[in-house]
Amino acid sequence: MDNVKVSARKRAKKAAALSLTAVAALSLTLAGCGGSSGNNSSSTDNGAKASNSDASTNSASSNTGSGDSNSGGKVTIDFWFPWGGDFQKDFKKSVVDPFEQSHPNIKVNMTFVETTGQTQASDKLLTAIAGGNPPDVALFDRFLIGSWAAKGSLTDLKPYLDSSDDLKPDDYYPGLWAEVVYKDGVYGLPWGTDNRAMYYNKTLMKQAGLDPEKPPTTLQELDAMAEKIFKKGKNGKYDTIGFIPWMNQGFFYTQAWNWGGHWEDGEHNLTPNDPQNVKALQWMADYAKKYDIANLTSFSDAMGQTGMNPIWSGKVGFAFDGNWVLNDLAKYKPTFEWGVAPMPSAEGFPQVTWAGGWSYVVPKGSKHEKEAWEFLKYVAGHDGTLGYAKRPNAGNDITAMPAVNEELKLADNPNLKVFLDLMPTAFTRPVTPVGSFLWNETMRVQDLAIHGKGDPQALLDEVKKNVDAELAKLGG
Image 1: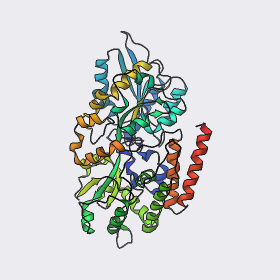
Image 2: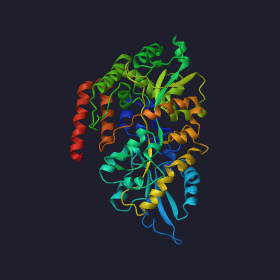
Image 3: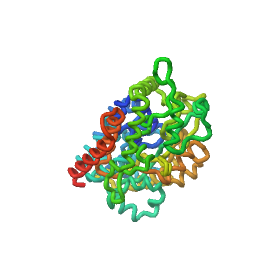
Image 4: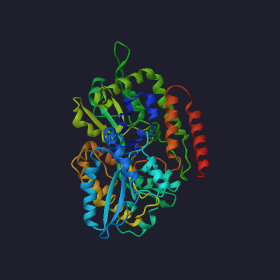
């Protein structure tokens, strides 16, 4: 998501290319959660992750004492990050080096520490915190802040923030700031984001007799247009697909918001069985039944074999995905006409999006908390955010700071502008100790519903029961 991210970037955006069963299994990876745009995420740089894995393990295990003061009065802070590829080189040059120049008493030691399994969390980080020997700073999926803060694994930064003139909550998009706040504390600073919109194939629209300059704005319009694009070949398999609700970033989470649903109420009680959420899940199940889940899965599997995002195959009319997909253009150079527009919503509801992304946190037990805060202020503040965003391979990144995005003139790119315009009102997933549990539950019932193995209302009532029980276990 998100991320999702292991998270982030070219991201597990190949969701559509996976079979439905695989999509469910990789649910947390595909959240996008974690993730913002770009090309350095650990979720897609598996080769880089593998090549660095042994070195990072050794470096992480030898963390003891690395924060000790050096000769000359310098303090070394340890910074753990989960991204492979060129991230370390780019980040050091654009952020760490300028920070060290302006803070000659602080040195930053960067260490790659991979995430665990198909998640965007790191067991190594959790173990280091539990053992009293954590790094001073970590690059961390914002989606996980609620659950880690609830178990006391992160440092509350509010006292530092309250006494700082350098940063304020209004410097960030509202939804992103909400993700770093748990109860009365602030447990991270936002950094990098992404969101979702609709990619549409103008060429297929023309062929179907539709106006390519008028993409659907409601889900009802989308249904009608998509129906005209579905075409089968002689073998009975789909040659072209109008729309698959669960393809790419079309998770149940996404569709629930598009249907005007809510995942929590005004008092932050979780509401997975909100009436509009039920309608969204029923709508997804209806698509699976109408267009034949086996045939849709066969199409997705075929796309997966190509290694290409289905959007760029030229065989999909409409798909929901993130701003990071714009980075594919240099590679695939599509020959058909296409466009980007906000995702359609149910009639009577506004068009919306949801955002994922990353943050910087100070793990509980940091040996150099004050110096860590100085680093956080820089890296997640104006100068650090701008410095990294100006790197040559930034692609279609969106930063967490509106003012920086304006300074970079990102809106001059009309396709990226669609995503930027949605950011001020972007939803984010509930900040709760059971955030990951809820996400996995939604993926579980999504898979059951589209395979005709449960009534949406009953499935979501069960999710509500399960998440409440999980919260009770955690005392939250």
